[in-house]
Amino acid sequence: MATQTIEFKDAAARAAHAVQSEGPSSGDDLQDLHGDKMVLNMGPSHPSTHGVLRILIELDGETVTKAVPDVGYLHRGDEKIAENMTYNQFVPYTDRLDYLAPLANNVAYALAVEKLMGIDTQLPPRCQYLRVICCELARISAHLLGLGAFAMDLGALTVFLHTFTEREKIYNLCESLTGARFTTSYTRIGGLTRDCPPGWVAAVRKFLDEVVVNFDESETLLTRNRIFVDRTRDVGVISRELAIDYGLTGPNLRGSGVDYDVRKAHPYLVYKDLEFDIPVGSVGDSYDRYLVRMEEMRQSVRIIRQCLDRLPGGPDNAGKEPVNVADGKVVLPPKNKVMTSMEELIHQFMIVTQGVNAPAGEVYFGAENPKGELGFYINSRGGGTPYRLKIRAPSFVNLSILPAVLPGHLMSDVVSILGSFDFVMGECDR
Image (tube, rainbow, N blue to C red; front, top):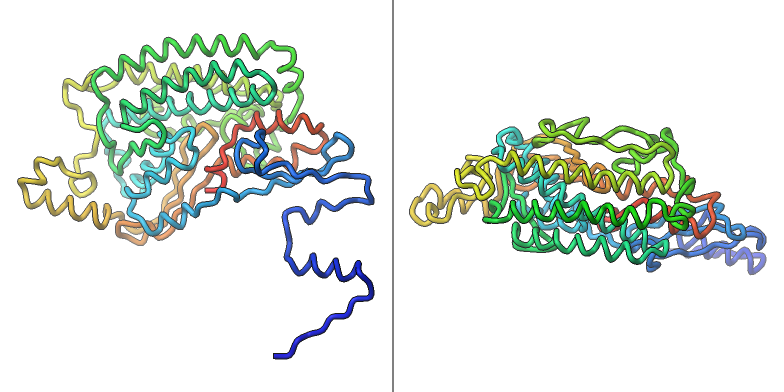
């Protein structure tokens, strides 16, 4: 093979060719402009990026003039992994998306597969109420950590300690319900792994009475705190139109005054039967996003209390209400029947080895997760594994607006803006 020789007139031309040969990088458009501006590499190990997010920031003095987010450091190929697993086997991988709200991820994924199979309307009422309770506990847990870390980034360490005290109680509730504190894997296609244990409903009620006190304490420490207000008010303003254009969802969208919540716009489970309000902001700044999350937690408490009052079968399921669909080809049969009946044994063997037999087709289902709309697109060609699975990660979409929001702010404001976005890189990178 003949080799091509390139002659350079000077060292500058040689250097330029070397850069081009390496291929494009995320910082190509952040050139040093005759020494007038500086390029700062923030992350991927910076504590205020809340994970492995890297942002290339161009500064003119202390003012940001350009910002380019660089994501993908936590990419694990979840969507490709799903193509080689049965639908139930992929449930533990959903725990690792927004790992601050694994219960909510479990529910969203299960509902997507159930929509594909056409059994989403057959879920027993007790299952639906328990799933809603799990989603709202996950929302409170995620917001508590998000607000605590946000406050700590701005110097209010006490708030972080207050919020983590309550999150520990939620972990205890998760452990007694699912057997795990962090990665719960609680749902199954067609229902849940198990019913809630005796005394769990009473423990949840006790927690709700205590956590509302914590909300008041946190607001006392932050809402009228002069330092916190000065560092968040009129910082990171996102207009209603810009938020819609970039596809923001969740509290970041509602903070800009857009009254959109998947639980209201496209109700699922029993949300249509529950009473709750959707808090929205008026300015769209970091302060509004903080206020929206504070009120969302109070609304979650309101939702959980309604679910506990309406839970079919009573607190300890004295009436033996089911938590799974009545279909032996979808849900694993009871163990005692597997050991005594050939038909149940065959169903058990087929579900475990080949997975539930989903029909061919494609569906999309989006759920209102703490970070925004978590969506699953599933393309099926039949059988027990998806042909293609795509995850709409709200953190990934929300971070896309950073190049439009960060310029014009001081470097110290970047920390405030990132904290108010409350993103999780495990979900962003997938």
